[in-house]
Image (cartoon, rainbow, N blue to C red; front, top):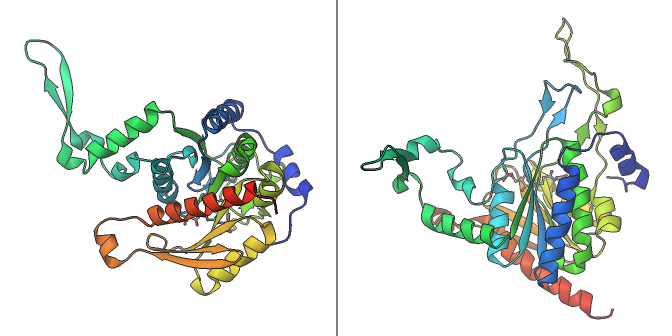
Length: 320
Ligand code: 9Z3
């Protein structure tokens, strides 16, 4: 991973079209961060879900990845429980905080239309048995919504994500060390620049499809150095080969010089992660019993990181 030059990412932005929600989302994020910071609250940006990489500019086909957004959506809930205000930058149709538990469900199976006596009206009744734990989930969701503590912002493609990440960093930067970045989205490493992309649908022919993709500049470099230089930054490292996991997490820390890498492997990511900092390495795992009780590794990750964040804020107050 070479250190990125400024031109890598500024060139990336000049070559692509801003997402339709770029300006309104940038304003909403700046206003959100400013309001919560003024009230003394910590603000975290949680990124979540995969990114879509178009193969044609009138896009019929695209490359995607496995990420469901469970990690980001669950973590957002635990940050809210700990008193953070949360900007939730998520992939369109990936899981959302609170509703994530019911995503596999056909809502219509849980609802019933009941006639209201002596009127022509109907009311809708929910079968609670079909929606396990719905009452406390709904109560928490309503409280969060009424307090304005969660700001969802949606992206779809890789370039939308990068635009909005930069806008989010600029919005949270004035919060200084009280801002946290929790970069759980699974971001593509490869893309086709707009200038090299065919306009129309790629035609199928006799020969196999060959694609040349460019490397996506690593936005962690400008984020840590320029966009939000005083914030607490956590990135995630995903591997399929566990023997390389911690070494690659360390390499990312050494390259970008941010605070934490949460390292995980594809198969064990729901039950085990390693939290890597410059001078420590801590395993977090769910026991079999905790899994049975439906505890979540995200709760442990967020609890641990919020303690690291407290220390970071304290340290930034005291002179070197
Ligand atoms: C992660 O490693 C997340 O933990 C997962 C969560 C994407 C595995 P799900 O959404 O999965 O709950 O299904 N995210 C970061 C993955 C990533 O792309 N990291 C980059 C890398 O490994 C660095 S930014 O190089």
